[in-house]
Length: 429
Image 1: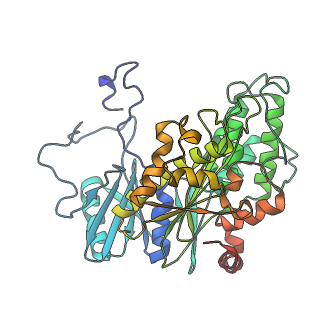
Image 2: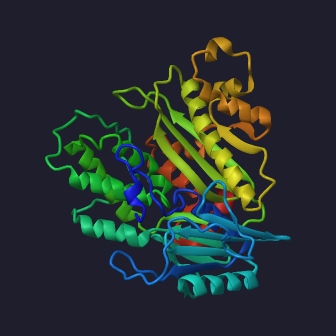
Image 3: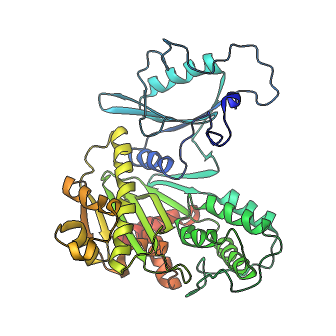
């Protein structure tokens, strides 16, 4: 905001000047690394004054020429995310992540971390939040010898309390079975503000609740003109949330940090536009680190095309994640296994002579084929009954839904130890 005077309407009003990391992905990736290597997690907070603070120091809009930061510490700024810094020496790595004035420091080089804290305190007057990292940007961490559970219990409880919708009936799935939303199935809401607020808050919960991804993307399709039927679905979802408040993602300590991806689609799922739903899910070792449910941008002419587009979305995420993890010191991830339930889509990605079946596909869809040729991806068929990502594309029966959530790495702190044994018993690798 300090350089707001340089902005031009319609050109760069969207720009911000404090780099922040995408909470959607890599905080979970580095927490998974920390859980696997049992690295300590440190949290720092910069003591600064906002809005009306009196400044007695020189303030630079740009870094002065010749200034290197941090001096003599050899931290390298990530090319994938400018708020991420790494320091590598021999067989150790230290990671610094910055979100405005909140800082996470991860690594096993204790002396370097102490030096970094001292240096930052001398320059910025930081507060060292002693003890294990427990809360960061609304993410709550619970520790065990077997790993870390990341939840958003406090935010969930506040959401339900502030909404003040009662009574809420507990449900076993976020959406009613076989339910399809339409834009004209009931009267419009006279005041959609509450609907907008609730869907936005549920979207924030998807950072640790992959089970909410499909319902959130479904409800988001109707933000412009929500109806009373849409609001009834929101209440159903809140009932599910009230029954599963402690749920979160389980980041397991594991020495085998392979990367696996899953993709799926629901062809022609939207009853009005006939667009399909794409979903993907990524596991680092046995830890969930990235997922998404999204309506495809165009109409697919076949189930195979819809699946192929989903594979392309998953492939794009794999490329970014592999580059990030390689920056963080993991160099044995290739080839990444991509699981898919559609044999035709796998053939399209592997076979260059399917011209008659694929000539209508857009060029960007063949991104998957290029990555298979490069050796980044290995495509594997997996039946629907075992496909973890099924929960991101459709409503499924409650028994299968709960079974897949266990495989997705979802748990709760109260049941942590018991589910460790169940998780290792059922997870398909």
